[in-house]
Amino acid sequence: MREVEYRSSGVPLEEYALTRRDHSRQKQSEESCERVRRQVDEDVAKCRADPARAERRRQAFENVAKLMQSFKKQDHEIMRWRVRLYCGHIIETEAHYTYTDPIDAGGYSKRCPECGKDGLTIVAFEPIGLRGEPPEPTEPTPPPPPKKPTRAELERRVKALEEENEHLRAELSG
Picture (spheres, rainbow, N blue to C red):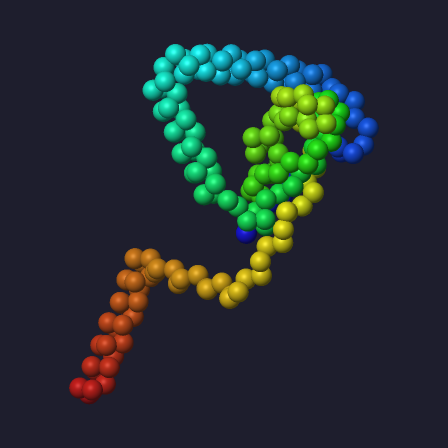
């Protein structure tokens, strides 16, 4: 497992005053959620009008669900984050350990389980730790393969061997 330096922004458990940037990001999130809702409503209407389309859509969702389940990660690959949402509530969220913060991991906005509001932006976050400890390596990692010599190194080696060969021939004949 590679080392990752995790970022924090604010301290979720301390008092927090929303900034202009927080208000702006929340407004963008709400506008984005509304655009997505309209697109979903349009798509649902099209699926109701066309049963074949609805069946293709259902099958596509089933395929995606199967694919996502096949990517199940181990506990030591999941980083836990404490985040403060725009509404002020504090929740825990998770992301793959390779992400340095929950926003980069696609957690720009969340649904708050306490107040039920959706599309709330994360205004502060801090890493808590991995969901589980990484397993101990069962055997030592093998040494890296020897690096291949360069052409110049090979030419020097050939020249040295030719000189040694001449020297040995001179000794044998003399």
